[in-house]
Amino acid sequence: MFPTHIYDRRRQALRSRFDGGMLLFLGNAESPMNYADNAYPFRQDSSFLYYFGLDQPELAAVVDLDEGWTAIFGDELAIDDIVWMGDLPTISDRAQRIGVTDVRPRETLATVVGRAVGAGREVRYLPPYRAEHAVELSDLLRLAPADVADRASLDLVRAVIDQRNVKSDEEVLEIERAVTTSVEMHVAAMRMARPGMREADVAAEVERVALAAGGGISFPVIATVNGQILHNHFHGNTLAEGDLFLLDAGAQTAMRYAGDLSSTFPVSPAFSERQRAVYDIQLASYNAAIEMLAPGVVFRDVHFAACRVIAEGMKDLGLMKGNTDDALAAGAHAMFFPCGLGHMMGLDVHDMENLGEVWVGWNGEPKSTQFGLKSLRLGRELEPGFVLTIEPGIYFVPQLMDLWRSQGRNAEFLDFDRLDEWRGFGGIRNEEDFLITGDGYRRLGPAKPVTIDEIETLRS
Image (cartoon, rainbow, N blue to C red; front, side, top):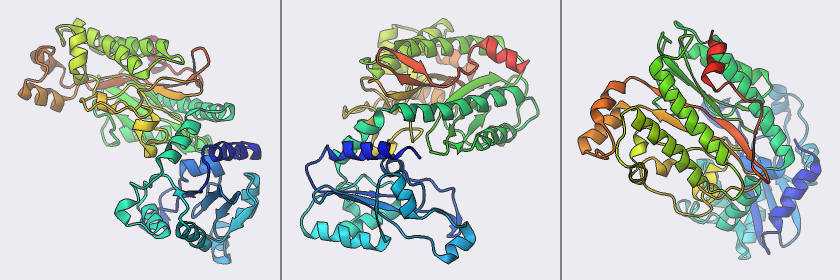
């Protein structure tokens, strides 16, 4: 938990965006796996954490702009709870640490919100991403369940995004703690992976490092010899000589701030000639993107700069042909890079994705519907305080090759016969996390091994 004045300052900045009404924040509840007492690890709603800092279930908060009060709604532990969970600090004690002295029973929330609704006052809330929140909002606000999402406050969404997109100094320090642990996770994987091991062995060690640091993982670990599958959470394969191993994993701190890194390395002691050739192209794309980072730069342009390096590299390998500008405009490079260059990061590994990428990453500009480009989560002009990832990749997806060949899609830019020779290659990506500063950028945390020499030194 941050010092009290930080939460006071955040809520005051939020209040200043509105003339009146009520702001309603629902915290998360436990989410059962298969019965009530066997729950998934609890994760508080990130916007609730940002403004109220209380990382426990079954809470809500109201900021009444007309009457000038802020309250936390929740129930203190009963003896039955204490027997199972221990004698934890009271909600009142915790609330005082974030500058809120008004704590009320959870059941009174319905009365408070109901009176506001009955009086015709505006009650603003964020779009729900959990079914139980949609149901509760329906009851509280006297809305049909189908109308709840559409009635969420865009003004509140924009206000929260404007605040959370710009990371404060204390947030940057917390993110750097997560990134530092994330680097340790990746180095551990590079050191241990050997032929005959299972993907699960590496994934288990990666998660152990995160837990040992006092936090956990920021998203389910991707640890795979099938790197062409972008979000592959299967860990049942056995590593073999000649494989490439792709790890996409990050730590979160006890305060829930995230790191997000990707690495690709050979299961053998060294890259093969073919692996080295593709890795060099990916790394050149990666470095080209990093060098462009600065306030005022449009991230969509950074994305296309990385795409250009990949397209030119594929031409050098004989896999692409024709005019590069035309190929990029047609989206032909998405055969190899079918996703986006990066995304915002903070309390969420894809920061505020629940509030809408079109607002978080594009500032309201409509996103493209073109294959590949539609998956770019960040396209807006960069500002000081933004924290983002850079993760270009090169992937050889057999199913995509077959589909585009059958459709004749981008045939003027792709040599499908040569592509067939690469069907089992897999995929490569690297990813690190960056802060946009007043005059450029800063890599967060220690640099992870990224060059071929650095990786092969660890693998030897």
